Length: 161
Image (cartoon, rainbow, N blue to C red):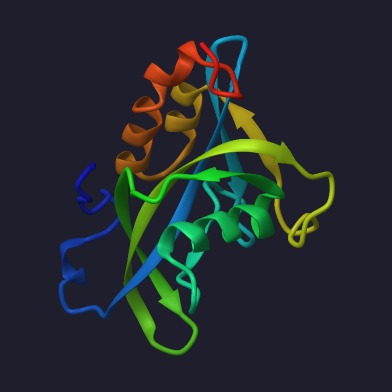
């Protein structure tokens, strides 16, 4: 697991902030022996990120990440129960004001991509090579996780070599 360090855009003055837990799905597929990762845009700033959100009562963090992948990107797939890493960022919470979010990231092997999904009108989604995705996201810890997908490149989406 990759340990989270504060991204450069998260200052040291976050020590006093409330910490909230989130989960995310690092959605990937293998096309012609090469891994691709899915990025989506955030609603407001339109920056590239992976599907993520708050924990959901009654679901494990991995199951909640899988649910976020569906709602935000129209992705179905097999989500690993073990997080591959985490990243942190500062957010203005509607009720709590500034908070520090700690996001556990779960790899999700994509089995289907829906044409329609709950947030289709609010986000864009696009597949990228891991290196390009790493360049596009604002979180160095997340960028490192994309590189961890490289060894999977010898399998196709069904898991066959």
